[in-house]
Image (cartoon, rainbow, N blue to C red; front, side, top):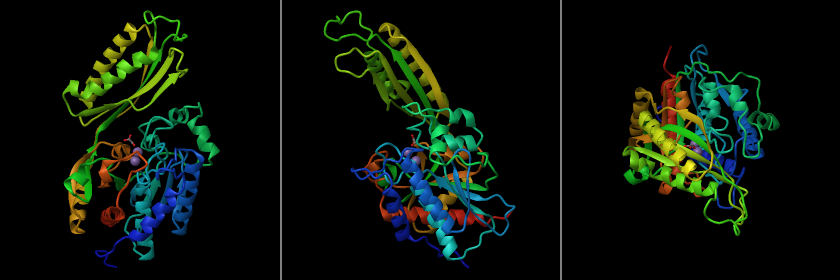
Length: 414
Ligand code: GLV
Ligand code: MN
Ligand code: MN
């Protein structure tokens, strides 16, 4: 069959996304489907049911990554893979991650109903714990699968309540027995919402990132001295929250100070005992630094670390710093990036070469296989929030680009 005029079923993709959005739905119109929670399990169960309806070979590996593989004419050839993540942020949106799993599902449904044969096998994946907001770091299971992170280190990560990653994986029934180890991949495409304002501002439908910024995560622990706030004079206090407050502003000012292209954020903080009339004695907060320039991000951290140590000493609050996670900036395969742009143009969609500020499993996949991403616009540039939205038309457009990029790669011989 000539596949030139083949298109996905946009209505079916919409219904599928709407069905998924019911799992963990929040009153504000978003979803809360934190990794390895009951909501994650329910969404996984539904995803596997849909994979089985297509007679795919379904496997779950020891990190809980779910693969569905469709045979090709020559199954000795490396497959074409596409996927993203089912988990969400707390009070997250209905598109981040899930579009990149339901998008390739719609592609496979389209191939299935049109009885399209491909030369290579075509596969879909849901990566466990992309978000990293329950268990840091992010993208941990694609990281293990690609060989960049240690499985047992990942298993020992704990959430805010001290629950272990591996225990939660077992509890929801998704610790599979297949090793989480890479196999040869001919091409990896990840379909995702942009999560920023550029496509909307430039009035483009499809974005093709040339790569992803580096991501560096740090955890800071401060110790102060708790006391009754009323009788304790201001002089001589060891207030861990005040020390943190000074540090947080340094993080916010860091990009300007370094004079380069980077962003720096404190997004999470725990204050102990968190009572209005006790001087705080324990504070934990996180630091996230991103840039296209890995060296700049590292120099920024050196500078910040010195500031933190000085500020902590000034307040008499001992500091402990964990350098939790680093992933280098990730320039994608130029041929595949160009393929995304060309395919968009062939299908009549306006398009733009850009950069991804958000982290994606594609970062780790790019270390082991030719990789590219397909972005569609985020309304008002909002993401990781309940109001996150992309039009159904744009969701369909991105899925059509994915379909044809996957088809081109899947018809390439050995
Ligand atoms: C992943 O969601 C990120 O933090 O960019
Ligand atoms: Mn995502
Ligand atoms: Mn996200």
